[in-house]
Amino acid sequence: MGGLTAAIALKQAGYTVELYDRVRELRPAGAGISLWSNGVKVLNRLGLGQEIARIGGQMDRMTYYSKTGESLTDFSLSPLIDQVGQRPYPVARTDLQAMLLQALGADALQLNSKCIKVEQDADSVTAYFEDGRTTTGDVLVAADGTHSQIRTYVLGHPMERRYVGYVNWNGLVPISPDLAPADSWVIYVGDHKRASLMPVGDRKFYFFLDVPLPLGTDNSPDHYREELAEYFAGWATPVQTLIQRLDPQATNRVAIHDVEPLSQLVKGRVALLGDSGHSTAPDVGQGGCQAMEDALVLATFLQTTNMSVADALQRYESARKDRVAEVITRARKRSDVTHGKDPEKTQEWYEQLKTEDGTAVMEAISRTILAGPLG
Image 1 (cartoon, one colour):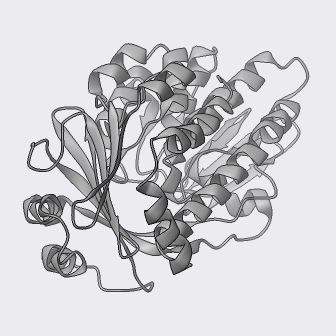
Image 2 (image 1 turned 135 degrees about the horizontal axis):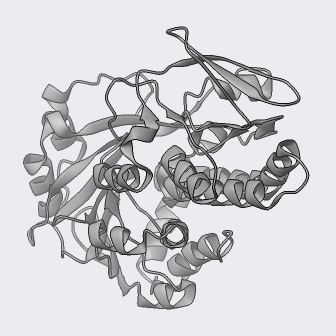
């Protein structure tokens, strides 16, 4: 998502853009994305506001339930939308990727292009591909994901990912009233686990289920239903219905990792963007949004510089490094509370939800959105 958004932003700024991906077939990672208002504002700036509104879900309320179905808190998101000036649009990753590709032009993307080496000098930067091809330009934007190879080049050393402590199953199911209201983000919590349903476009829910597990547990789609039925035994009827209704072969199972905040995002004419520069747990829903912010800030500094590429990229790093580090740290802390790293704190959170009227939750989301480059 970050690479496509950056390519669109740079193309609109007048740059000639080449986009390469190591995969043979372009597939989105994950089923859905909680695209909060700061990400939507970037798409609005790029002229894609109507398109994201068309494919995104209408999420008007947020509801927490206990694992047995007791309502803990239920509130309208209207105050949040009014405060930040933009509705969020949860969206299926397939739909978002297709929208961005259409905006860019599919002919700009070259697949089966694995970058194995980068070299640069005072005037240019060159990427070398596994099949012997090379390409040279003024700037190389590395949006090569959480397993980034180019991150090692930028830092000068490998940076290992860190297991956050839980496994996430996610996918899409048709919207149905026996699961959740069509306009609500519903989250069931208990036993340091979560089960969630969020409306996206095309009358579907994006669902996820979280379970704290040791790293390296078995991953077999044929057993997903049985595993989840065991992990969520005794939970409310909608959770049981979701588990029976999901398609195991179309469900993703991800051991959640993040990466420590990086000391730098730039090396000369090379810039890290998105998960390559700030791989984060999804617990504050900002992974995709931060990649989109990166894209806008990078394009803006490159377009407005009258000094040098290196200067523009250093300004990009200065604008983004603390911002993305804060998101990584906050997502990690949120995950720890949600998933029982300190069971007493998790129980306190469950109790707090019983008296929560939405104010604290929306204030936290609002602070993140309004701290972005578009306010």
